[in-house]
Image (cartoon, rainbow, N blue to C red; front, side):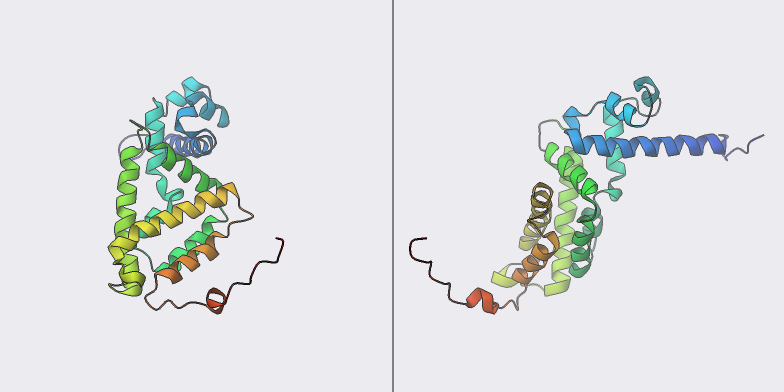
Length: 217
């Protein structure tokens, strides 16, 4: 007879159910990235995992419940927010995370689509992303303060620069998804950090006199 867990459920059956739920969430991530929340259906997710729609409803009774599970698993696809949560990571580690994102386009696409969708009226993920950005700004300010102190280039405070940090991270990801051959996220992010440094100095390239255009150009 199979061993039971302390609450009386059969351990093997519970483990299989949890594995199946995780598989469904993984499939939902892919469908959401392709279609957005409005275009995602439970039937499409069920097809990805070889279930009927009725079979999927056994695990997630509504589309909103499935989205909630996806958001609960956000640590898998929103590593930037995890990094900036609380005290935040050192900026150099955040730069390494940007490099990592460049190897995981599917995760970046899922985050970008869900975040963009959330601005629409009555979207079920709207509150989640409001909290996400609030924490990212707080963590970003802490990370900037640890790196540069209370004053950044141009007299900016860490709190004023933090929304710029979040905007650059998300904006680079969007541009990279649209044109990965033309956008180097990691290099652009390092350039942005140099602009924020109180000790930022212009490079020879930046101070050189522009060459006059050829006549007739």
